[in-house]
Length: 371
Image (tube, rainbow, N blue to C red; front, side, top):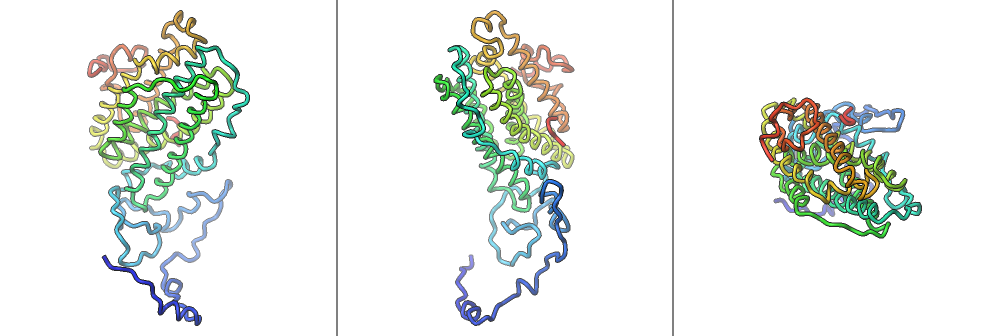
């Protein structure tokens, strides 16, 4: 590799006013291509003009040079491994980024912590156990994009920028649920090995395709359904606010994952079987989560209003939520172009009440915001 050295002779010339100016006189920039702000300000879509808005299907170089700039010969190779646009792109990623930066919120200031009431002990314990699980699973949705960001070619910078907002969103979710567990005096609950196994499956993914399918489509999709239900199950205005704000963030992540998969499959339908195999493994672990007391029972207790009421109602409320989670997941897969209804890997007992399933599908194993 060539060793760079300071051009001290140039510094002496510049001190005399003898500037180089090749950057000015020999530039190939599109002089006169002017980005105009739209109603909400100057967005990524507004600057996606001329050659600057042309995202290559395959990046010609592996550098951090801004797409559309004059790139000097000899720039270092950054070693990016994701150099195909379809590996990370979605048609909604520019708009999702703009929404993400405009809707950032603070887990310190924007939650009315001083209004948190003293809840009955069983309700508080249920809320703290649910907060423990959510604090645990949300951070993997920050770890996963962080693991892959440095591998993504800089020509796809808009996708990288969106994934950066996801890292911030998920850090905030972990923060807010950890704070909720400690704010009411109940403290953190129990962490189960099965939850960790699912998180490990995501982080151990051998490709971005695999990890994104497991996380954005399956894992975060289930959590999004839980967040939506959480606003209804919330025992006080504090939890309502938490779930409402987390829902708006999670919907973006799921929308990106759904439309990314759709973009990927439209350009290479032969990848469908790969994605099916990723979800086969993920669903097998998700089925265990649906039968884990630390996940199921807190939800049932919050829905019923206490342990005694939950015991009387059995799993009625939890079953409604489970069916909704599965149906929304299957609809999401369909919207992305992947029909899972004929090969879903959940046991038959967990599929009771799920509409439009091919019978026998469960024997194989143990659009949200998409504009």
